[in-house]
Length: 300
Length: 189
View 1 (cartoon, rainbow over the protein chains, first blue to last red):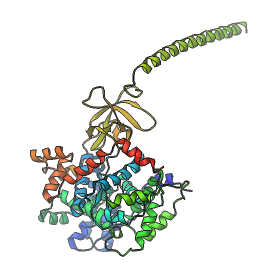
View 2 (cartoon, chains in turn cyan, orange; view 1 turned 60 degrees about the vertical axis):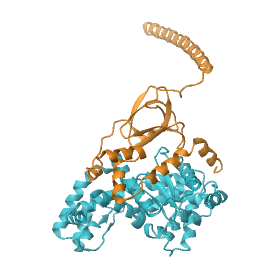
View 3 (cartoon, one colour; view 1 turned 90 degrees about the horizontal axis):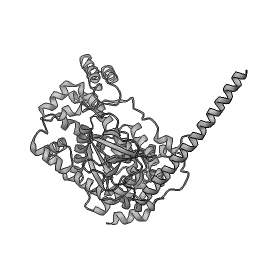
View 4 (cartoon, rainbow over the protein chains, first blue to last red; view 1 turned 90 degrees about the vertical axis):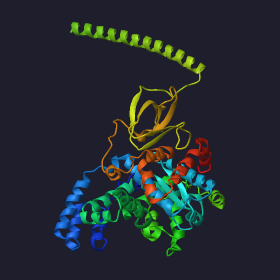
């Protein structure tokens, strides 16, 4: 039987899917693949979307980029992640309430201390929008919107959401998505040239792709399901009721068609997420929920 | 047979002498420890129990040395990837006691996962994407002032983004003291 602790230690399951986006030259650029380039090349070739020559380019490009060690370049990773965080804040400004910012930070740091890496340089911010937004950049900038917090019934729900995002940072999901993007992009010299003609440098391309991942397309499903389980586990370990995330999703699923819910486009269907969270072992002791403290924080 | 017996007796006597010697030695060491402990009790402990010092290197782009074993607390020094850190003590918590660079005698805390034994290389890959964008004095100075990477400043300038946003988040986190966090957590248990 899996325990909460073993759920957290589960190895990351890498999807073997490749997602093909149609549309001429951009179809090659948009090959957001989570598996190796060889597989992309095979898919592209067999589907008729790539010529044999293009297919060979994808395969060769993938091998070249695969040799790069993106994750080891910490300064570059930080700059990439900071730029993505700035792109989020450019779309949704920070909330003006300093007490709410500090409250979210306190919840976040409480969770951080419950992980096995409490010195991780993560920062927490509340966005001033009624949309339901929660996302994390690869640099460890974690955002949740005032609109999302307003929908929550207690602090354990906020802990579950921040725990989910913290899990993405701990698992380095942002850099894994970048690697997938690089694998696809490197194989498409034609698409890269087209982008270059538009005046977009490689950094802009990468940041746009990363920003789209966390605000529009989301990570792949195994990563999201794992972040759910891990987030609930971290919340439970910190002393919160680990069912907070599940209860928040149930609350949102009542209004699942809402355009204001960014998680609709970036995450798997809520019913599936709730079902997966229900499979987690029941907590051995009741955790804290603290509804009054959340209500007080959001009232400011 | 007798010879073997004599040898056994000699070995036994020898062992006893060694044991006696060890007991006397232990008593002396124990006495010295007691005196040392008494002397230490008379003066306030300056640093946590130190082991032999070890040098470690920061593996992340950023890592903070704080004044306590907590994710919150006063930042005594901000380090960058590759910076050397002298470890002077460790315990089971995973927090290491380290010398604070530039502050002789001062000791702070950093979690062991932020450090590695070998100095990390510069890496490859993304850095190439940023080449040529950050080599201006203006960008470098702005990055240092805001605690951000020069590439981030260059990107913000390109896109007309406000880099101050991230500085605000860092200020908020650094405004949380270890005591604040402890009080906040007290209600959760």
